[in-house]
Image (cartoon, rainbow, N blue to C red; front, top):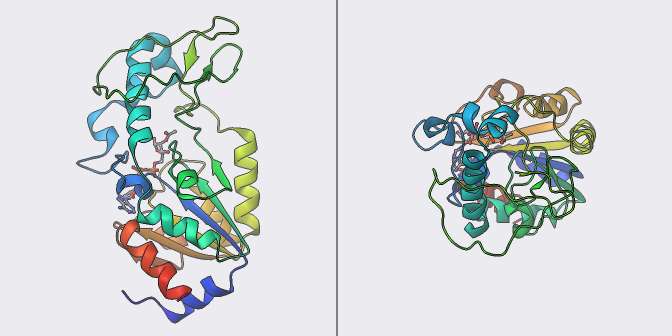
Length: 252
Ligand code: OAD
């Protein structure tokens, strides 16, 4: 794998790096993406029945069961070479922030400390009524089926229904996370965009903001995305293959 010398130089000189990730960065850990044609979750499941406030209202056990299935699978998954390369990079540049659309914690488990979650955290359910976090029971090494229904627990403080800790379609992003992400991409000098289709707003605007603010921009994805035209260097390939080589060659 050969990279443009200008790209290697931009990485070496960068003082503030943002790594913006989507489901593709966790694909090689065995966590399915959403929109890949064969394996993506939205090819097999209906987002309107599972990932909206109305869906939870209509059938809480269906929705809670589906998120428990995903939460347990994410808990069993391990960081892959892409997560590990990003964590390694954090030790090699002055400042590195991860902005992720993912609801798993594989960046943290790989060793990144500064991680902004735009779409929530699947392991942090909370009460729909009083918004207190709900402690996840330690019952749950048990595998679940993807269509298994499960009644959501009740909040131990107020008795309200506990909901998954993720952002659903039709909901706003957590304001603090969005503000931090926007500030990060507008002030960074280099942004690496990894494994996102760039189709979900407002997250998909972040690489565009970075490019407009003058940052050097890199995308790593096996397939082209709408972000290709906004990004200076498009590196085609799986993140778990490309990132370790890129980090290795830059800081050899
Ligand atoms: P998508 O499923 O839309 O896109 C995944 C991207 O990862 C695609 O562009 C793939 O080509 C790419 N990809 C697949 N395997 C890869 C690999 N090994 N290395 C690098 N890239 C790979 O996922 P997101 O863009 O993350 O929202 O989707 C954005 C949001 O839509 C998600 O956060 C989720 C979903 O609905 C919420 O949960 C709120």
